[in-house]
Length: 568
Figure (cartoon, rainbow, N blue to C red):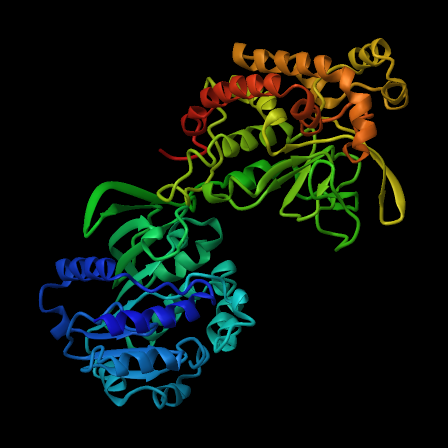
């Protein structure tokens, strides 16, 4: 056994570099077998023809014996390891590119050519209508990531990928595990078999909005019989942030449903236990939050090329013109809002005063401003500390704006949107972008320009005083907040921020001389710029503010569930 483990490790180190190819630990392979046995009985290895078409080094089948087992992989080294170490000697082991060789839709005569590349016993099982079970742990990443991978260039573009794109299945057409599932469904459709699938993969094919078309296709042929969710880190060197789903599917039409209860399982040393039930869900019967928040911008022309920011004060001067473009005449900000699930909250959500260089967002205009601040708050209050491998694929939906407490919560969300670490709204003067000089005014500033002008005069800051005169109009957020009723803690956060602006003003001129790249001589600088002053000169005050802001954020968080942005 030691030699086998060592051989596994050598191949594992080589294969893992391709990303997404994770070998199944014995404990979890055993758990999969237990669940299959519960559904199909103790003799399932005798009754079913089993094909692991992404077998790796055989971890899913190595400790068991089968009456008729087929193991295939694209990597010859993996097959060599199985043969040399006597893994599943009863199996037919063969090198096969599962995603590459398959007839086009409607090309029924080509099935003979495909069958010629398979073992005769497997072809016979298909044609005689034997009961088939696919047992697989395929790669989890997008095919595009494999363009330069050793032995896997054929995976990047293959007939399954092309066919799925032709059928307008979108994002799943680039995901390797959904490509495996799609081909299995095609096999089932052609041979009309009692076909079953037991698969380890990411759960987002059940939850993601971009997988809706794939779900429709898949549910037309298969129905969920069982599912368990566990932390990905139970696989060696895999992230703790997301979960892996093991699910078993039977031939049959899945009744229309948007919720899928699965067992949550945890490993303690050599034991696996079911600890709870998690309901995976999608919004196929409702509206996603990302669509809801963009309803007011739909149909408006988004082609205004403006300075593209990499952060509050970083400007990207080269790149594709249209990434991060905005709506002419209406836009006063940009909401970087990538994806709809909790997993994206930490790194893919931010607010800017100009376009974000990475795109994946949209303009903030007066008509969608309140929606933007609401969704920003709903996403940022449920981030690192509150995101975990169980809820990471939970999707954000259109909230219940008719809830009697929603308007007050949304008022307070405006305050929240100003001071988060991802609140990158800023004010920049005389920046160069594509050969032109630009001034970015910060419409998210929450104080009156008259107050700042007085502060500049009191501290003899001529640059800020002049900026007040040159760019001296009240900002959108200041005007919006004047007429709103805020909760006590929101008002306290806003008041404390105003105090820190006043208290730090005496340091602004010297800080600007030391760090002109921060653009601190603009009167309407954003919180991300003010923080730079506070970190250097008033760190204790900044710490106290963050304590207060966190308390406010904690109070806002339950609203995310109360108003239906996320399901409990």
